Amino acid sequence: MTFDFDAYVTAARFDKAGRAAFALGDGTVRLVLDQGFATVEAHDGAVLSSADHPSGAGLLTGGDDGRVVWTRLEGDEVAASEVASVKGRWIDAVAASSDSGLIAFSAGRDLHVRDVKDAAFARTFTHEKSIADVAFDAKGRRLAAATYGGAALWYARIESQKPVFLKWAGAHSVVAWSPDGKFLMSAMQENSLHGWKIADEKNLRMGGYPAKVKSMAFLAGGAMMATSGSHGAVIWPFSGSTGPMGKEAAEIGFEQSAMVVRVAATPASTIVAAGLDDGRVWAADLKSGRIDTLKAEKGAAISALAITPDGRRIAWGDEDGAAGIVMREG
Image 1 (tube, rainbow, N blue to C red):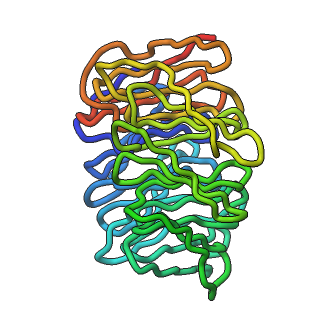
Image 2 (cartoon, helix red, strand yellow):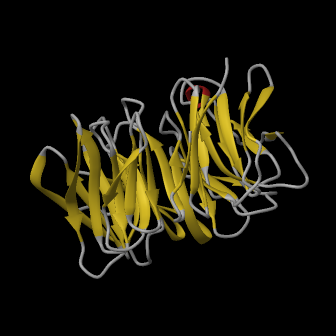
């Protein structure tokens, strides 16, 4: 199944029911139905960020119109509702937790938190510099905010607090917690990946990338982490109390002529998907070493990638607005 949306694909996602959705640079969200798709005018401007809604239905999007919107299918009808708005700001990052029911989003230097079950709940945490990305830990209790000079850690529900600031010089653009909460990983504006061991704030220096790391994903129950930023998908080992400290990464699907720019992985198994800068998509089972080409046609760089928990379906989108859903065998 393929689509031509004629707008930059910001995100591809599968919700809890396995329904695919695409968020686009023209401000629309496209929900894939049994026949075709439904279009929702979610934002007056571009969609900049997205996350799964805590309920597992549909997706949350942040736009350059300062709004956070929840788009979903209710019965046979498409619904969209505003979760929050910050006038005159861009919503650069959105995160959500099904465990805590919390939603977090950044607007400039401010990190905002909302509770889907309590309309009166609101928290705002202000940083010295603009926030590039936000992420909840596995329990949804703690938040990490990527900013210049490191990452700030906040307890999401506590109103007055001083954050733990994990320092590392440079601009941090993407953050991800390990599933066990022991490590925080950060992709930087330069061609580098950095991390911290939370317990003692020790630094994990993980360089050697030929390109910027744009995405990362944990798999195999947190024993591995895949990243983009090289000619293949880079796989870091996270087993043991020290995680990747002192260990070497592996690389799968290496091709000198192309770069992996997006990765998606199954949380419980060893399947990872990769989107390339020449428009191709493949998936690999790290246990067997098997690599399947899922999209062989070349085109614009892949800008969005998602995989279902069973690893059977992969959704992709590219910079020119082409998108699709493909099945992986086995």
